[in-house]
Image (cartoon, rainbow, N blue to C red; front, side):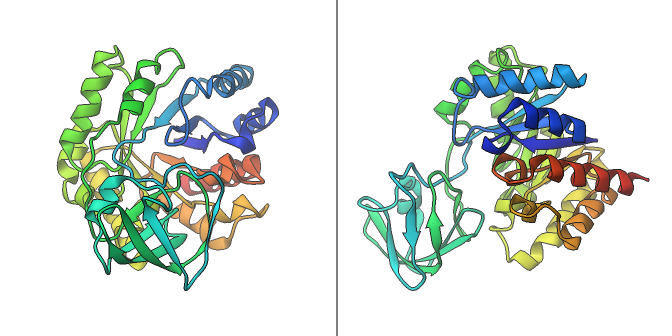
Length: 323
């Protein structure tokens, strides 16, 4: 099976990348929501050099922007005080205009995989005035969802197309397509890959919303692999419903003979702790028993304090489950 690390500041040096390969990493995810392939060229050079040294031929998976909604670039982190208010849009925290257009008073807005929760108090066409229900310090480019509303956006952004034009040069083997809504979204990415001579690049369709779940049959037929992306999928429903959704997606992938990977918070506590929780290793173990062909670490390796240790726990737990 594949064991993914997400590339980031915590594993950007050659020694840590070598440790990740030694721990069992077989693939890497590069999140292009925040950057470009050109900007990551030095990191990718170190990644492939470490892979050659380890005798591994890794997969390089780029996670596109797609229709995912994000907070814009901030001059500095913004403190959101619980019980206070914040403006989204003109004169406040930058967000896509489509969010400002769609959200209505009473709607709730989750940010950074639900770490923050706002409620829209008023909307004037240029900005939303929101009450802070769950606060903290907001950073640039964090994920954003208007709970219960679908907001239209193209399957590929201009930045995605620019990155795909450079994909062959940087050794990209797979594309993670975010917020897949139906088979046509997948076909749009396939057409773009074909135009760039990238027919061999595999598409991993991320299931992150209810519409993707409802259109799963078509997505299963169009994609090469499914990614059960629990971060935003957990925003699309009450969190206690997420395990059932994951089990259902796993079952349908098995029945269709379609490989799938599981992502988000597999060993989340290891961003700051050297040892995972008992619940986390049980989660990893059960994902393998459910038939996962891949497991993906995100913040654990990108920004965490213990990237190689997290990979080691991931691989050893999965291998135990495989027995």
